[in-house]
Image 1 (cartoon, rainbow, N blue to C red):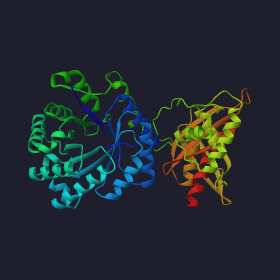
Image 2: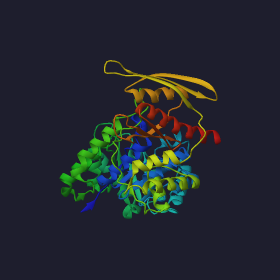
Image 3: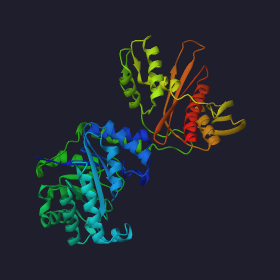
Image 4: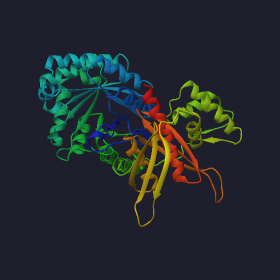
Length: 470
């Protein structure tokens, strides 16, 4: 029975209708990997530092699925993308090129001959570093048949292992699209040993039907999305193949038992974006990471766990964190990931404070909206911020954002008890992400709101210190 690969495009379409934080993208990739999706497609590189770190982090988190990243039609893009992706267990580079005259000339400003040369050179450059290369013929259904044949031939000769045909207009009926795929395969003998993929727009609400029709015609890969916006639905395509696949000799690796639950989790995550009235960015439901260390772990093991939490420490800070870890580990059986977060927050990158908390007044209750009035000092000048939030901590963080004029992705927020009793001390750890890098701060107080404010400002000062040092 033919194994049909399902390639998830959820992260690629994020810019179209919703946004995902750095942490959410990693969590989404883990969910798809666990579900058994064959390919997870990521956004390409636009910001060299941030996007490269994102791709590296996702590649490290995915163990079973292929991780696919698109390149631009130039050699530099191939090099930069491969450097970020090469540690993936199953990497794939994607060369996406328009093959219709409308898109070639008006969007890419290239003539047919120039486009053919760009396709050939880029695919060859990708194949020179990666064994799995996909050529995506964008807007294939509106292309000139003769040119499409030349483009496919150029890509296959240059080393493409997968060729994907896209119906960007979404105007074809299922039998028409199936006929188109069949005609392209018949007209291009070079596709005999190549994986054929399809991508269908849902303009007429028939993307799922068109995709299945193409599979029945011989396509071996379908692009879909767990949270579809104008694309085929991963859930629908997987269910159809699971239920009726035997009738057209097809099966897929997506777990039918986990499908509904995972798709619901992903939909919840995609629909839980950052509200304008909240500093909290993501809809990731944190679970225990399962990371535990003991006094017997060496510095290499500790720093590997620290990197798994998202930190990028200098050699000096790594040594400080390990020394602090040894002190804690000597007193207890094991050290958890959350405790390791607190160690990094207190030991790594201690910097002179740019912002200092002077005063804070919090008003909250069950009949009034939480309000925070904070005064910070910077270079001797007092800066005030007043904000309303969903709760006292939410309001306090918003007031700090108002003062600084900056929003940083709130990667994590933890509250832990340090002592017991009526006068118990509470510890908070705040992790902020800037430029793809994680910065953490710690605060301790009998007032958990005060501890949270101190932790946020501690992380903020580390960001400001690095930005001013550049």
